[in-house]
Length: 519
Image (tube, rainbow, N blue to C red; front, side, top):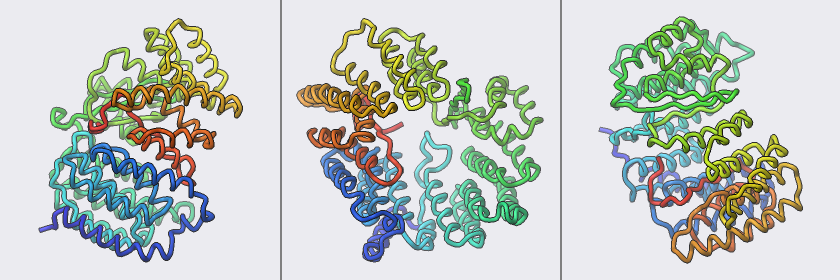
């Protein structure tokens, strides 16, 4: 019998705690690569964010605060990152359901990455438990992300020679009901990276030794939709290196199995936007998964023709993808039904990254109050590439008849600030930030009076552009705010912007209770 997850977590905390002395003495290569002190301010802001977080309810911390704090800390100061990852692991025991699972997985993932010995991480796989039902939003068990991460680390350490061991570990996991097809596929591609261009045939042989037994297992064993999705992801990955005729039989069996999916039991939707602004949607698990695998399916014209004739709802979507795969796409559980105006707004903002004029035309269909806010979102999105066009949109909104209060002022100013930043007009940007922060401060003071501090339209982007371009003005403003969830998020974002690692995007919720689980 495998150890329960709580035993696994306790042992992982013990192992990683013993490693702290070793890593404090010898910092990771990413820390050594930067001059000492470069991230002093970022770490200070991050610590302030963490201190505020400790005063907040557990769900608020677990949902999207402590995991992000620990992740950034792990890249700036591995010892602090390990400490906070262990804190996240401990705190997760106070949550339930998908919130607990996601927090545990995030913590274990960081601890795996911070452990210099991949062998210890592999040993932990034997303790993974799949007793919790797969969350309705997931196309495979969330633990598969940990398996994928660990397989990648092992292959980076040992190369292709590690693949037989990983296949054994995959069998152990498969015995629990979830075979990690995708993780094996990614590991195989990682193992062959150095061969492409110098010994392609060797790379192909390595990939084939992974695909053949996986295909045999998939063909001969009972499977659920989650197995179909995992196997499809593996095929999508391996098809990047294998000749298509090696993958085609497996693809056709996969599609046959997908077509038998119980769409009342597995409910997913797909949404994507093409490079020319067309919208691709599917509203059931079968069509959504086929569109997710479109880059692979499209290589089989006979299969495409069959799908178009038997599933008319796929015909237009597959036609759209002939010019290339969607530039942005998402797949997840059905969203609550939205009013047509809300969908129009969402589409306009999404399309703006690829086709600004199509987005503007769509936004013009909205009522005046919705139109102005949507146009400002579009202006912010396009300012980097088309600052003059963004400025025109903002000017049109300013001539409107809608009354101007502090909230609409902050939204307008934040869009103007994006344009000023894109044009490198530092004096104008500072002036806008000062006015915007003054208005935002009045709003926050009123929120404090009523007892509910939350993000409001335009505030997050305003602070984001300020942290990116004028930290000397923005950081004192953030630090002057009273402790709250909002301040913790802003400090975290500023710390990320000032650090030497990839910037963590600001995640904020507009007038939403922080206790509400993320969907």
